[in-house]
Amino acid sequence: MELKVDIFVRNMETTERMTTYAQKKVSKLSHFLSDIEDARVDLSHSKSARSAADRYVSQITLRGPGYILRTEERADDIFAAIDAAVDKMQRQIERLKGKRVRGRGDGTPASEVVPEETIPVETEEAPVIVRRKKFTLVPMDENEALEQMKLLGHENFFIFYNANTNALNVLYRRRDGTYGLIEPDLG
Image 1: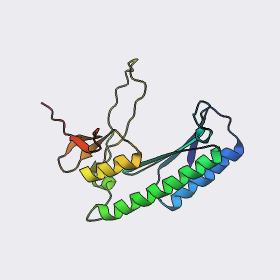
Image 2: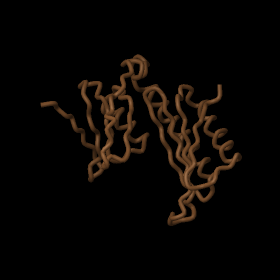
Image 3: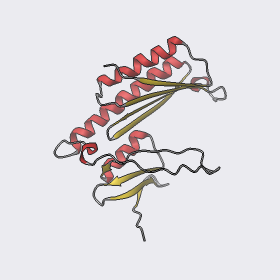
């Protein structure tokens, strides 16, 4: 079964060749990781980029049980940007698969340990909030959270459900390059 890839284009004209190329390249990622649930490709053109080599942007996001992988690459040609993003995603998949093998003692993924729960999100929109995200928290320890933070490319913070303390925690990067952990307590 071929992976369904959602392609979104911004600030540029889309062509059949471009969408077919992106679909073909990204769908091949399912050979490396078989449990991909959702694949999204965002292609854009930035006229105001400082360098001509940074004008075309290709961002790939893969979602599956217990993981979200994201890559973004820039190039002077949209096809080169797609190729670079796919190559980078393959490296992230290999890294993720290696962590899974060494991760849990019994080999069961975290997504199978805890039943999926949805996080309620308020529907009332305030003018200050410009974007809302909804995601499923998967229990993990601090080292897994740090690895997931790096895989996602989040440089500032990462929210996770700590399996050791059974509480929500926030992992953040400090100015000196070390990491801090916030353990909220309902008073």
